[in-house]
Image (tube, rainbow, N blue to C red; front, side):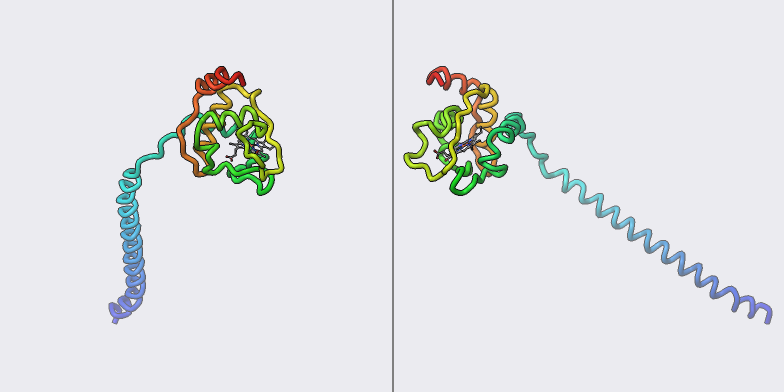
Length: 166
Ligand code: HEC
């Protein structure tokens, strides 16, 4: 009888402890599974090649663009309808380098500007910028806003200026 009562008293406690142990181990093992799956994901991540560092003219050109060009051509290069043209995939931006340098240095007074501009604003020339700043901003717009074209070097700017006296 004494043993019977003893069992009655201890069995619920025992079951409780057992349940706790089972619960603990099942949680623990699912944690381990999670850990294991996290571990297997790491090689996948490292397989993707790290992005190449952008060339310095991107950051340098962006500085000039923000200070000088952004108010008109906007941060995304989209321009302002009726006022300032977009710089996205246009012939001036992506095409012949001397056309782009001419409009940056001479502004929209450059003869190459459209016969009848649909844009009300006037773009002044930025010939007061240094060769390096012009090269950087030109290279920046040629490689931003979805544009892709080879950069323009400060040497090319200097050569353009000495050839055209601009
Ligand atoms: C005051 C506003 C203003 C500022 C500032 C300005 N632009 Fe312009 N930009 C214009 C306008 C207006 C035109 C269009 C001229 C025309 O149609 O005759 C233009 C035209 C251009 C074009 C030719 C557009 C095309 O069709 O591809 C380029 C390239 C350009 N700008 C680059 C720049 C760069 C680079 C800077 C900064 C160094 C700059 N602009 C600063 C107003 C501005």
